[in-house]
Length: 142
Image (cartoon, rainbow, N blue to C red):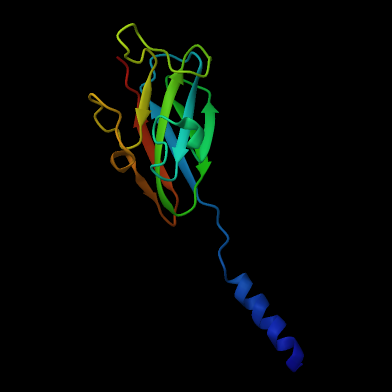
């Protein structure tokens, strides 16, 4: 009986742990049409944010329905930032006008004002806590 005590203790310990996956639901609103897709990039830190998309922790796409896109991403506890683009022509790249302004929609978590520079990680960061998170990002067009 005594030699089974450690096994019983471990079973009790593991059965009391909550193994819940954290998810962050991201909703992109204000898309001007349902053409193309939304390309969304989740960053865990400032390294590469927001221009070096290959350094994002997660890159995904979403279909657009009724000028809105929703993505659910796995995200453990921590601080994150998101950038996205409305890839209307499905070429995988942001299109620019002859003035150098984006001609496709884009946005960032926390919806910071975009002026003469892209916002930094701190301006766009949000925290994923125990219950996951919900983030709504408004689309900007020039």
